[in-house]
Image (cartoon, helix red, strand yellow):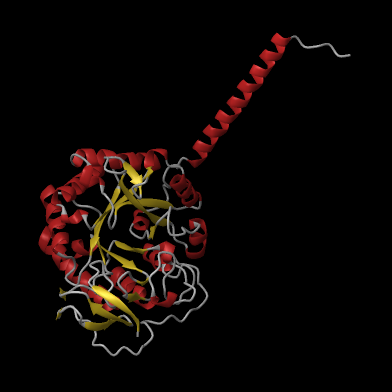
Length: 411
């Protein structure tokens, strides 16, 4: 019979085993945290790539494996969206719900991109949501909140996406642009882009006021990009016209010559079907890319890589999706244009013959006109759908955020 272990010795051994188990768990936790902590930005990713970074939602809309996108397209950069205020506090959070301070999920995405030879910029703001500039006490406090993001992810680039409802708030815009100026000063070499709403005139009243605020601060970012979708645009010709008008606005606002204004100008498109039912095909992207490169614009981006794949069915039954484009395409067709803008030669993709416009329908109502005032009950056709006005309206795009028009179905 084996000797019995004294109870005191047994207790000590059990305590040692528990301590070792706890140590092992702690070591594993530290190792995991280190593995998910974003590494330093790639030194070999040049600034032109930050101007060619298409938008990606890393936590929503079925985000793709970006290393696979990179392998298929030669793309080396992405614009991760969006940083908002955590609740009503002056603290940054992904989509306003996932605090940056405790994030590991987006950090893992950044590690994937950097391990594949690329890098990221991070976009702050976007459409809707509470922006840090709205809740922080001033430009310095807003900058301090964004500095947490830059330091957390070792960023070399950041994008200020100033649109609804923030850009209607002059104090919030002043906080954002003042913060951008502080970050630019405190992080030498930081690439700073500003993105805002686009209109046929280049940008609207609030966008123009934003430019005037920047001028008053003496702040000059790497570029200003306008979003040429959801504003009554129809293909590339209307987008190029808006870029020319915006170019004139940059010259008149800042006193720049033509070449300098182009070098501080950017395009931000939407691939496939937009939220308001506009269509932008691969041919449209190619035309705008030709314009951007020939005029030496410094930014060419789009919303979004999450949507850069074909729906099932390809037209998604005439609806807009956050996870596919609603036009016929090969996977990552539109990302190849941003890669080409940065100077890469994207791998070829299987040939597709996408339509350059929606297929013709049988719409009988008169086409919607941006310069016509409509009474409630008026019926128009727009982007292969029939729409009826709920009340008097002027210049509100059918399907747009104002909600004036009721969709009566495809025609």
